Image (cartoon, rainbow, N blue to C red; front, side, top):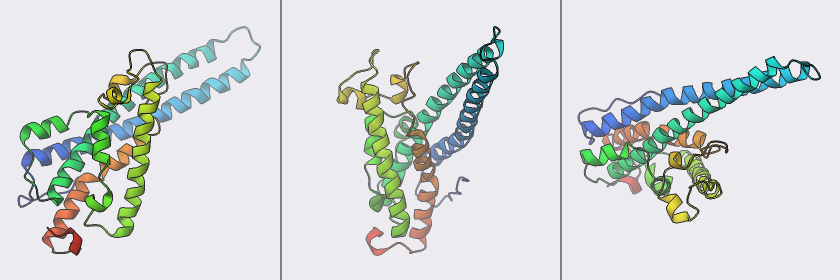
Length: 235
């Protein structure tokens, strides 16, 4: 999805626009790289399985052994890309939510320090806080059917993030077990090699959620300027 054009009349600071654009284009490239990494991992596993079949019972297993090592390398790269993507996707989700909320609410622009801080990976609790805003309060310029679809996505994403906490609590190895400490931490800090990535089941949903905000902010501003907002959304 292309980044929208914001005019000088938009009630956004240049830094807010720059931050939205920076994270948006970052995620476009990381999403493609993550999808490629998933494909490479899947292919390496299939190659290894096929090689094991035709070398079964033979003395020399160089082929499956090498492909096993290849699959390990591919898996490590996939995990690294996934964690990097989570870092920026979670930041984009919180930044986008914060800016859209303040525009819809008619609140003052964010300070430069606030914008800069929002571009960093948030704590899981801060992400949950951003996800807590219902779409009826956030996507006020959209039709009810549109909001309903995104509301379902939002609720599923909240459940996925809560699942991250549940999985992290079982890791041990220096990861705190109590919920408060887990919610105060970042997912990338809790990742431990040799376990399933904590972002599994949540990253794809988070990417879809974060991707919407530049265009939703633009759409709200266009509808507001055109006087096309529903009565309940008018300030």
